[in-house]
Image (tube, rainbow, N blue to C red):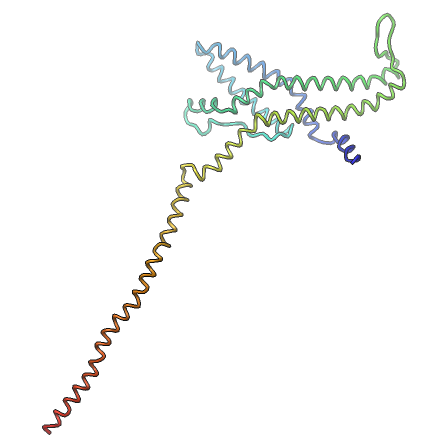
Length: 290
């Protein structure tokens, strides 16, 4: 158990996800600041100029930009954080006409969730930036303690010729402290990355589920070709089984034909019997004259 815990703690540097998460945290603040300034400025200018119709193309440009930004954030959440997010929504693909495409795009909830995620990216970026600066600052001072002692550099200068130089024991303890700080900082950043991944899944995961549900329901309930074909083929196979009872009724009629045929035979059969009788009667008639 201890070995597994130690392996988990010190093995954080060997995990690729750790460094991908670190890259996400480094990019979070500048991207969040850019998204916030661009979207707030573009939406404010576009809405303010809608009265003179100039704001409509500005709003369309901003809407297209925030779709691209949302698609980029989905890629970051998927490949840098390992979050289970869906593909960028394309609600306009199955709609004809410019007005229909615009209505489908702005009527999709995923479009507005993307906008909310981009605006909230600044708050997440501030937290990421604060963690990075704080953890990096602690690591810097832990490394600076032995340097200040062995090179005779004052660690704190109070002015008026007064300065404080760290003692030897503190400089020695700062070395393992700096090493442990590296591993601990990576774990803290991974924990914050886990929170960011769950946040991305919360806003990006609803786009794929309805599509899958529609794909499953369409073959059974949609008014397309598959449903009528299934409903027609099932009854088509039943009528051949329905005539089976009439065949059983016809089969007894078959033996009745021979009975009808046998009756004439029975009627014909006595004729040859009668002919010999007639011949016998004729024979004595012929014999009498003789």
